[in-house]
Length: 400
Ligand code: FEO
Image (cartoon, rainbow, N blue to C red; front, top):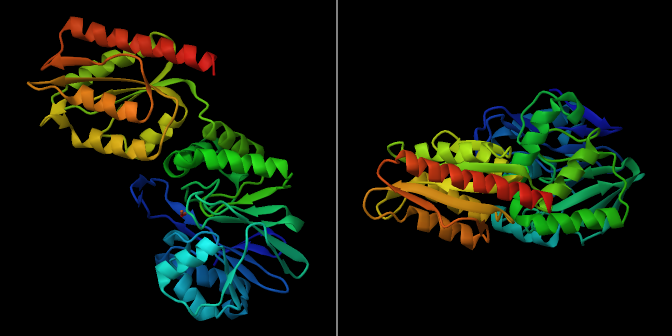
């Protein structure tokens, strides 16, 4: 089995999931990886494991380097099952001297695996453990994105093992950032942030400030998903700074669903209006765009126009689902507007406006409702709405 020595005596021994296409509701059309790292020394340390169905990949890779029974410590940086699914089998096989985790990690491991007799070693935030001529420093990163999450830092190697932080759902035969297409990599990192970390942006900012303050020297960031950062570290750190501070581009989205194409006609007119201002625009039909891809586009967009007809006094289910998903991820500082067709009651615009108000979006318009099929004049109004959005976006981004 192929392993990769990422630093002297530190090996990538994880698994590539070429098959996964849905990660708890997040579309992973490029697959993913579950990265685990094995550090050899006076004590042999395994950092994280992999999803349960890929446990044998992990075991065979470890076996390529050492006999698994020679592993002394297992570090659990994050309890979510994509990283601990193999833990029970690995613990049984390895019989580790210590399972190192945070206080919350301990609680969560107990709640997941119900094994009070495992050899837990609970470390405090910022505690260090010597392992021969190297040290592991643990840094709790609570709510990034679970209460148990932490980073492991090896100062002698300037290596940060960052669990989900800086990850990407990108299954590849390459292990490093400079071996893959950079624009695809940055898109996957952005999509990961938008769908996993967006709501914890205040904690991300705090962590980045803390890391800068203590002058943490890092020349490699090894996340638990995707490729390892060694060449574009500044780029991903700057991207995390921008995303966590809600920095936006001159870009607006038109996100819609439609029943008999009336709302689609309105969406296209709104889109043309935005385009007329020179603001970048994306027209995203929810029937063909996955909500997690829409979130990736929303991350750096300043404006969003939502379109949906009325169904049974409410919204079409895809729009209702998208609104619930978006709300949970807490996008901030967006400009919003709504539009939609209706037959007799026409509540959809009201529902979309309410959802955007709850997210504290600034509504730039009261919204446009059209009975059944839009006339040319109705479409003109939609075009004007788009134009207004495009202009407001440019103004807001110029002043940010
Ligand atoms: Fe990759 Fe939060 O697990």
